[in-house]
Length: 279
Image: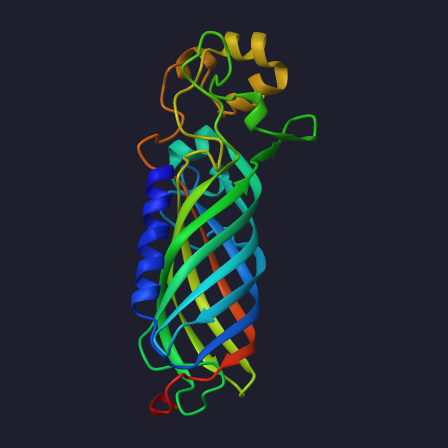
C-alpha cells in the first residue's frame, strides 16, 4: 500500500509540474459543506443512501488556467444498517454501524475550460480530479444495554483471539484514492463557488466492521466478552451453530465513502505572469 501511495503522489506531482506554465498563478482558501455517505457490505450498491452531514476546509493552488492542486481536510459521518436494505439476507444479518471519518486528501484538478479565480472573462468550468488521501474512522454500534461501543477493539470476527491468530485487528487509519468531478465558477474577482462529488476507494474493508466469516461464538465470548459475543452475531433468527464459519461480509471488495459538497473560496494570493505576452 505504501508503494502505491508513493507512486500516486509522484505521478500527481509530475503531472502538475509538467503542465505548469509561465502564466499567472493564484492561491485560494475555501470552506466546504454538504453530505457524506458510505458504500460497503451494509450498503453494497446504493449511492446517497443514509446521507449524513459533512464539511471541511481546503487550499487550492492554480498553476495555470487548466491545472491546479488542492489539499483538503474533510469531516463527515458515515452509517450503514442492514435493516434499511431490501435484501432478505441483509435484513436477517441485522448488523449496523456509525462512524466519523476524518479525511485529508491531496488531489490534482483538470479544468475543461480556461479558468482562473477572479477572471470574469472565463468565469466557469467543469473539472475532474484525483489523488491520494489518508483517513481515520472508528465504527461503533449500540448494544442491547443501550450503550454505544467501539467495534474494532471487540474483534467481532475473531480478530486478536488465540484461535484466530491469523485474523489481525484492522487499522483505524489507512489510505484511500479520491476522485470525482465538479463545477466551479467565479462570482466576483475575489470569491468563487463550486459543486463537487468526491468518491473514495478505501484500502480497507472494515469501515463497517464487516468483512470475513463468523467466528466460533464460544471463542468470542470467552476471549472478548459478552458484548463482543452479542455484536458479532445479531441475526434475527439464525443460531450461532448455523452461522459459524459462514460468510459475514464480502471480503473480496473494499469499502467506499463519498462526499457531495458545495464549496466557497476566496482568492488570497496572485502572482503576475513572468512574460507580458501571457497577460
